[in-house]
Image (cartoon, rainbow, N blue to C red; front, side):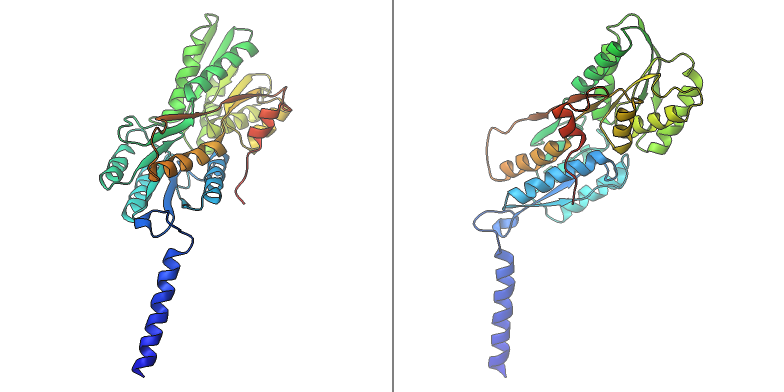
Length: 333
């Protein structure tokens, strides 16, 4: 009986050891016993933009045998408390690296400091921290340049004169603040363009953006000539507000957004949205994981900042090859 028990114990031990080493080779994290575990934490998981970022991170996961990606974030954007909790959970679980899109440039500094204290490296993606000390790299669109691109195109649509509204996104969202700054500083270059409103926030939820958009149109709809919104939720909310307006403002008011969704693509096709600035979220997700992997493998000369492209999609040029590629990015299966 003792011999049988010893035999069973040896078989069980061998099976456990084999599972721990499966697929790892000589590479990997967690003490070299498996693939590097990399957590990717978005601002939210509902917007189409983040689904495309996830697709890019999954592409890297599929390409590199020595990497395992875990994707987890708040359901909706703007929930920094939940994002902090998720980040701290990955630190406690001993993940090898964290790729983080900070929902709040200030509040998310604390969990990043905690990660660094436990020797968990951090790649920041999409939206910067207010203080980027200690991070491996920052992977993102040049958001300021995207705001400039939107401003120049809106000025072109308006013939460099008219009255304009910008509906802002959210305080301490660094990416959208850069877009807003780029847009506003570009508008200042056109003396015959007047800003009617530049201090109303649509927030991360589309329902609130619709309400704020309807209030702005109620106050300024009889005189506004152009509108800019700096992200998917604000642009989609304003598009709905324009379409609901009884004065027939949709299509009449020149409107430029940022990012894409089914609603915004439909707006481009109908001419109710005249343009939107597109990012490459699939590439942002992929490059964030790739840079983290390179760091974990000990590679040097990694970029402090890795910029992905921004592109203007015009309603009258929807067959442009780059526009087609970025309007219909890969989706998560």
